[in-house]
Amino acid sequence: MPVTNSSCFLDSNVLLYLLSGDAAKADRVEQLLKTRPVISVQVLNEVTHVCRRKLGMGWQEIAGFLELVRRLCKVVPLTEAIHDQGRVMAERHRMAFYDACIAAAAAMAGCQTLYSEDMNDGQALEGSLTIRNPFRA
Image (cartoon, rainbow, N blue to C red; front, side, top):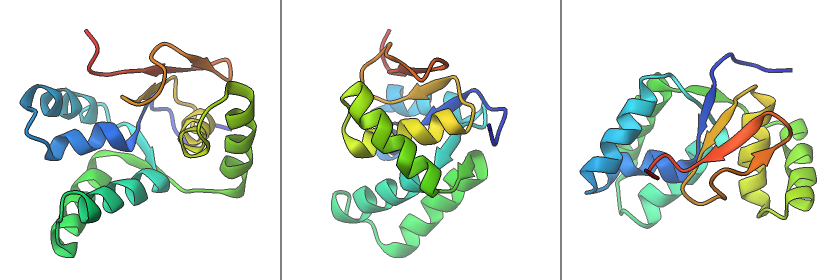
């Protein structure tokens, strides 16, 4: 059962463009954030990891960024059902497990679009979810 009526879900790789030097992609993410998209706790975890390990951000700076993201997005929890559906989707669609868990969270939240730069643009999953690269013209 859907937990939200939002139509889109953002992958961590999309959100991270807010911290990049790519103004065009950051602007696109800002547009998406105006729609109050959905993310999962897994997205928060992945963003934290990249901010700390790859971007060298301090914990307070990370906390500030995540606070902003959480104000602009609906956050769904990780559940056993999402884990189980992620395993099924990974096998069914030949996806990487963590990508499949993101897709499962999006599908279970009732989203129609999963914005990700790393997954197959245009791929339809579970009957109602479509992956879109938000930066593709």
